[in-house]
Image 1: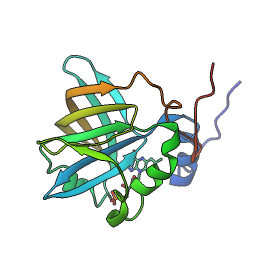
Image 2: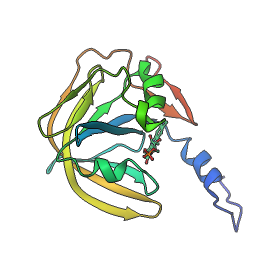
Image 3: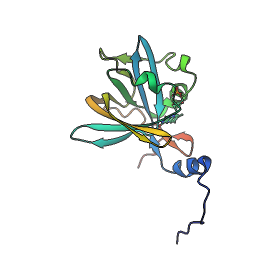
Image 4: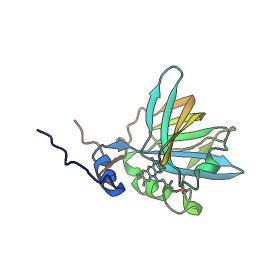
Length: 168
Ligand SMILES: Cc1cc2nc3c(=O)[nH]c(=O)nc-3n(C[C@H](O)[C@H](O)[C@H](O)COP(=O)(O)O)c2cc1C
């Protein structure tokens, strides 16, 4: 039987640990803004709706990149592959080096995708919903593609560490 202690202090580190039990994939969310590549890694990506086609990401309100990223006409989402652990850290690290050595493609509308990702989405912002210390960004899809080659499967983020799916 599950029992909950009463009057729990739901401090951020306790919440982060509990949320981290839930495994997720990781995406690169990126765009070209004023001629510069801007973007970040996000594990909060979720598919939302087929009609209209929508996905979402939750972005921390402290993000310094989001105010630039949201100015792009289109944004790119790339589902990262298992071998992208280092790239993921780079995309979460110092802004000036996030795209160093990254093979990326840019659409005319500014969506930026990582070439060897497992799936690519060309999106624009549909709605932003304030949600506590994050903003839930609903993205409308304009084009999608995914590789038949699984490329080692997706990058998995679980309990603050990277892993991969083991063959079932
Ligand atoms: C595995 C992983 C997942 C992340 N997921 C998110 C996320 O879903 N939302 C978010 O706002 N930041 C997320 N981050 C942090 C961002 O990638 C980035 O480091 C953060 O936004 C700070 O950079 P900024 O101020 O340029 O936005 C994640 C980082 C890592 C390593």
